[in-house]
Image (cartoon, rainbow, N blue to C red; front, side, top):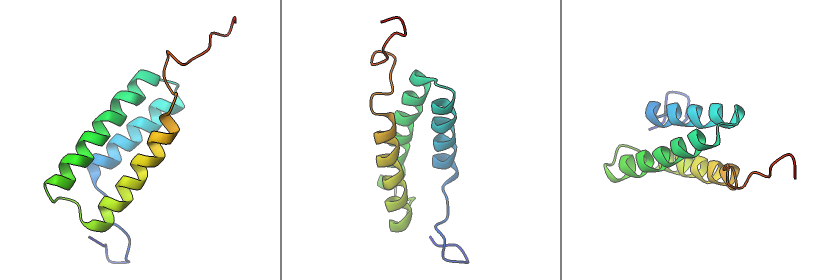
Length: 85
């Protein structure tokens, strides 16, 4: 739903997960960032299936999911090149 001033009302659960992902990325915690991203995807899917997000919220959080997915592409320890090579 829209708030009083036409802004999208945020979902606290999803916002919390986004914060966790971004904090872990900033601290280079690759496994944790990936884990929270998967949790975000599951929670988003669940909220959409249960009808707990309106259309605008779903679009907003789907867009965030795409942005995060792109940001986290290759952000794993296995893709990291050792500094000595």
